[in-house]
Length: 173
Image (tube, rainbow, N blue to C red; front, side, top):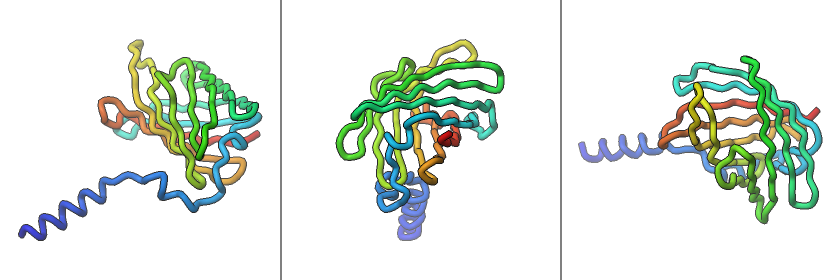
């Protein structure tokens, strides 16, 4: 019986594991952040609540530029309910595929790392829901499809619990 419980516990532990960035080391095309996020892009996204119900959708016009190891990504959001917002990222490329970013609604510094065709990007974001402001953790995973397109999956986390998810498709214009 003890052996069966050990096997069952091991199986449950493994089934709860998350993908690791190292899992994508040999994937292609290689994600070159400053090449992809350069010039004009457009994005389309869907926001889901914690039960998986779509709550909103949106589009984003993106204008990105780079000078040396510093980039600016200007995002202009338009939501289906008419809300408009802006986020301007200031990005610094560090060594070994590491990126750092700041924006006015980001608390502290966003941290990102690339391996193969995947970028992970984590940060604290201030969001407003029904007139109340919350600080949430965003866990972005960006997957390059080719040199012009990528998918982004973002978990929205509060108190260690997944509260929602954003799926985003980004394409160069």
